[in-house]
Figure 1 (tube, rainbow, N blue to C red):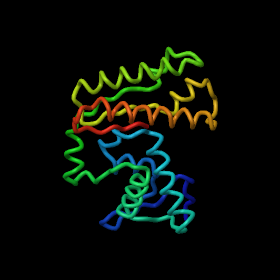
Figure 2 (figure 1 turned 135 degrees about the horizontal axis):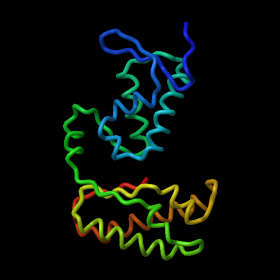
Figure 3 (figure 1 turned 30 degrees about the vertical axis):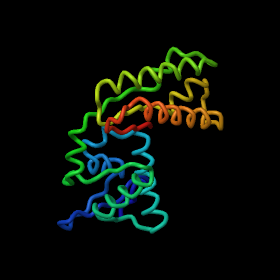
Figure 4 (figure 1 turned 60 degrees about the horizontal axis):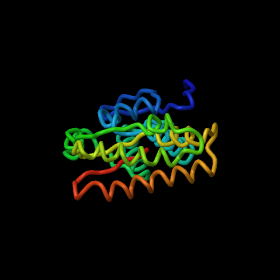
Length: 189
């Protein structure tokens, strides 16, 4: 028997064929176009968690695509995300959603150490600008790099987690105040 790479499983298709593949590659195929709406790090962590579940907890090296897909969906839901199969009507509607993205690292770019207050003012203004575009989803990405940039931290610390939580709470509060009963969602990752 051929030894699998540490990040691979043998996947069985519905027609009985088997092939070894990286779980991240299969994850990309399963999520399809929805992958652009999700943070790359979250997808990577979910994929690695599912791989660990099958290999370490269940002792399996071979799974069906359906089993992997169901476990991945469960992992993403546990992270607060809703991902449906490409055939699902909800995913087709999600593909038609108007998503407006903003990069938190870009907003933190000009803020120097100790000037988090300037960042929060910019963040409020950026949210207002985004909401003027009448989006279905407001997506602020790059939260972790933004926090590390603001604190000039090389590693994630309790201070980083504290600022992370403050930014998310601030965004939620501003979003609830500024969206004026518009039916849209906020995604921060």
